[in-house]
Image (cartoon, rainbow, N blue to C red; front, side, top):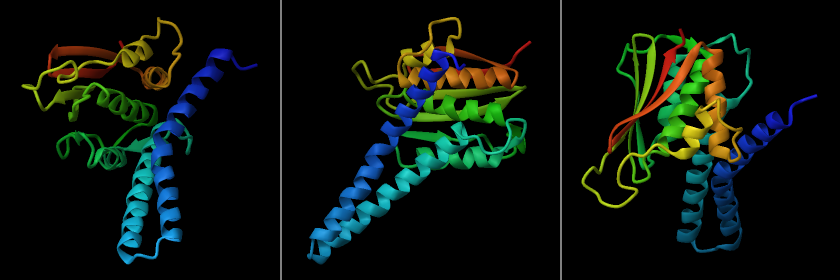
Amino acid sequence: MPAAADIDLVALICSKLCHDLAGSIGAVSNGAELMAEETDPQMRDEAVRLIAQSANDAARRLAFFRLALGASGDLTDAMPGSELQRVAIDYFAGGRVAFEPPALGAVPGDVSKPLGKALLLGLYGMAAALPRGGKLRLIAEDGTWRILAEATAPNATGPNAAAKLPEALRNGLDSAGPMPTEPNAALARHAHDLAVLAGFSARLSQSSDTTAELAFQRAL
């Protein structure tokens, strides 16, 4: 019989997926309604633009979550590093947080699937550390994968101007803490479990007001 905690974790993750996709899919529906009602060519063109943009947004979100959370194939299979990067680049394209992939040749051709999924979820979680926008960098070196969140407006003022590690990410990655009770923490806990399955541990740190880091290191 499945544990209640596992059922709750799945429910929280599903709630997050629905929340993130609802806006884009709703916009497609709104655009279709506008197309059906409007006779003005300019307004119909605007509806087509809205539908295309929203459908593309939903498609790239689905591609990201499918790779990060989906069950295609077996967990012992490898994940191509190029696919991981492509999905992450598409997901963050045009948003307030930019993604900077590793330098050409710095990533192995394949990574273990659990690690690849953990990295994608780590990128998703660290984007929340940049409420005013910024840049995410993925760095692979000496068996360690580092996700750097860098605020790009260091001279801005206010509580949301700098990089700040979200409590949900801290709580979710702390396997010794209580089970998550909100969706972002549930995704972080799943990232932690995937990293452990791949033989890695997760460590959060903040070196300055403008830079925070999530590192996946090989467990000893």
